[in-house]
Image (cartoon, rainbow, N blue to C red; front, side):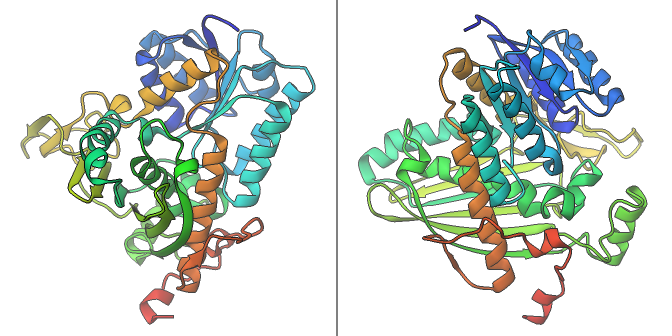
Length: 420
């Protein structure tokens, strides 16, 4: 085992840059290499790492070159969903064949687009014998973790375990075209973001220090999806103009709103419920993450837009568009919330710190690929429930071959309006 991990990042998009930003709060690891098919964004990310003082990474477009690099001890996979499985399988093949050695593999959410793909990821990792973690940043968000610890220590210890968790992630839409393309991404906002909200709710409903998979048994999922904003002709045309030839929401739409209710049996034998809401149709100051936990005699709330700092810019100031105040910032005028450290607030710093510490210790991280697989199963059950209009029981269900209508390109957002 090495004293300091050399980190190789696969991918150079939006989320890879968030990891680089978070690395200023991580000890025990440096970013030493970046692999990407896009030489320009890879170079920009490398420059950003050097600017932040978190590494002096080389860049390559060859995945195997990065994996075989003797400086690389662990790999962070941040590639788009449609190349995720093949990327992980190639990495694991190199390790299983002895052509590369890795102490850890960290995989961005969601684990895969379908349950079948997620199982391929798990099988590849287990076959190669690599310690692996599932990169779910929200369960490492300091506001969330602190609220959970206090509620369980002061509330649940006296009155009993919590029974309802609500988690929501809302913003105005993704940054890259592939997110909007349902066949590439695996769906719409449910596939993109409900993984966060489901796992955050599982985390809140589970006692500190215990694995959610041991405390909570999923019973059923009820869900609905809708095209509220981006399927309207005006906004569908806007997407088509922004991503010509890549996104067509008039003929191949994806949902921009999703809500799911998941029932669990907890370790005390009680019914508990997680409510998850996600939206690309939220127009506000920027990204909003909100959480709520309720129990017999207590509750807790977290909202990332309840910031300790705000700025005001008058209508006389016509500045350029940007996200220097907040992710998915929608305005450059008025009274606006300001996050002093987004990577910390959203949990990226905490998750990377935990992953590095786990891999250095030769341990499996708290968030495992098995957690990622279960989240994939719950999301696919949510899509199935939305399609059928019925509650989906989780016991004995086989979703391995299921592909949502949205991802197939056969979803009609008008059905819900007709009640069919």
